[in-house]
Length: 97
Image (tube, rainbow, N blue to C red; front, side, top):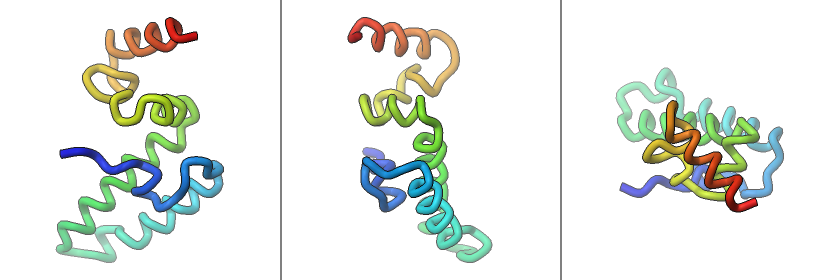
């Protein structure tokens, strides 16, 4: 299953500022919070997706990697995983520079 674009998940555009990203996250998280939507599996999944999107977009280095490589930056041992995957990711970046 293909993941939704993180910007789309938060309902913002790609050029949004850090403050806009945080504001959108808080709004979506408040709306989809499990305490407010008890028993709704769809709201729970959306809440998890919003948290995942914010986790990437709040960190400038992760956001830059996502903007350049999309979800591929964090899959198959990419940036978000420990060990050799992170090393391979940075080596590939430096080869492009």
